[in-house]
Length: 84
Image 1: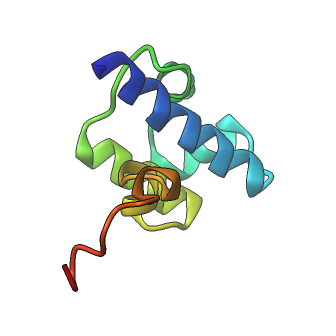
Image 2: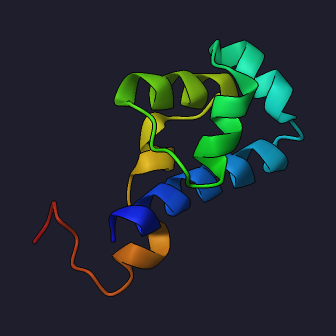
């Protein structure tokens, strides 16, 4: 399960980067992390720290929760946590 989380986060980062038309080099420069480290994160080989994930989210100009939180599909069929 832990490996699937790594892959899921990496896939979200990669998809968000592609949606914005950004290269790994651009995101790595904006976030201040090494391009090879970003590549390993996107491929699910390593899991970033919260600080690194925050830097990546900022480089992508998106909230950290969009990268690390549950996907909309994971919420499907779940009651609202606020009104429940």
